[in-house]
Image (spheres, helix red, strand yellow):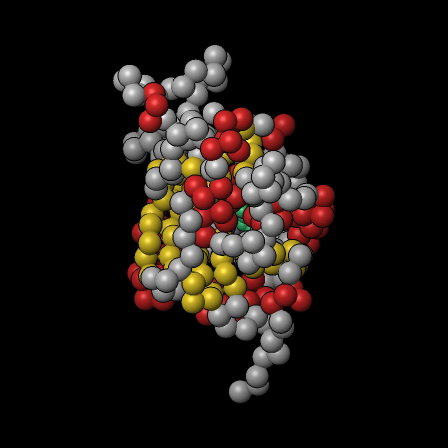
Length: 291
Ligand SMILES: C[S@@+](CC[C@H](N)C(=O)[O-])C[C@H]1O[C@@H](n2cnc3c(N)ncnc32)[C@H](O)[C@@H]1O
């Protein structure tokens, strides 16, 4: 059997590779990637440039198992994998993941879907959170307080115990209602049909990695994870099979830069407000500005 040539992961960083993700991961040594975020095609016949999103279900699941095995192989002992998908496909994927990694959480991201009829309103996407071991990196993260979009008043009533309100906001749970999908054209970049909000990825990165850790995204698309990694001071390796998407993502990546607060802590900001910050970075005075 011919031995595959392995690349030092550091030499692959800082770029979206226009390559099949399995081929890219096969060139990475085992236990060398700190965090993987995967948003694969959902097999819903979406119109991508290069990829045909309509495999027979069994073929889709066989392919899913192949690339997940590579993800598990390259993850460090304290590393984390996040898999974003629709609940039906996640339900079929958990047996594969359970055989490879440790289950941590099923994060429900409220996507504010519309009723389709003859079915429950699909109101969330799932983000499966798995780690290689139970010694994985994990950092508590806080989100900004929910506020009225018109008058900016706090939406949560503390019933006379307002002194208990944290200066920044609550710790995030496994249900996320505060991040909205990039539906509006003015918040989407041209050229890719399904982009995730950058601050969704930033929350996951702050939660599971340290500065300079390596984040890998096997299905980079428009590059949201690439930008999030750079803004949060992490290294990044991406793959997309389509040359145009890889080029768009590389362009966006090269134009982005680190985002820190006045104390030098990495912070995820959306529309001028804190979207996510590590609990340990919530020093009293750094936070009043965001309350
Ligand atoms: C759901 S989109 C990812 C969107 C991305 N998360 C974003 O926020 O822009 C899936 C992407 O996977 C890419 N893709 C499909 N098969 C692939 C493969 N075998 N290797 C690498 N990329 C692939 C498609 O071209 C598409 O851009």
